[in-house]
Length: 192
Image (cartoon, rainbow, N blue to C red; front, top):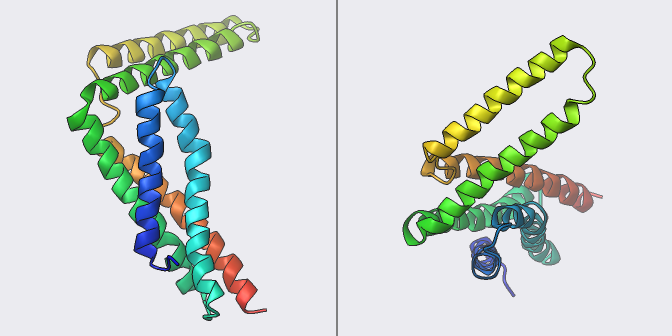
């Protein structure tokens, strides 16, 4: 039975890499960025939730009294280990092994931003009634269009070390919230 939080974290890392490389080998197409975002938004949180739950549940089954601190640590550590190893591996892969995949993701991200901007513009345009509002919308649209085209020409890198650091910081917030939920729930259950 797996009881070590670092082992569970490594299993989460392996699961993340399976999804990452499955998308890389089988899903690299015109929707690569969108499909990656869908997996990161809906599949990976469930995987990490299951890993965190399993980590807490294995200790809870032994009958050990667990307070908030113990449950929080037991839930947070595997997610941190799995997430950290995954982010580092993805960064190294996209920046050093296959920069073409990174370029594709960058291009598709900017293309998606342009599509969303056009959609917002086309939705807002018929709703506006005054000339002032229409003029302001046109001005904002022109500025945003210029910004996006400028970013395309200067090859902005959305997968640099700095950006990966921001992504990991956002992921850590999710881990803290989830660990706090587990700690509150399991602590209250053990004290009843």
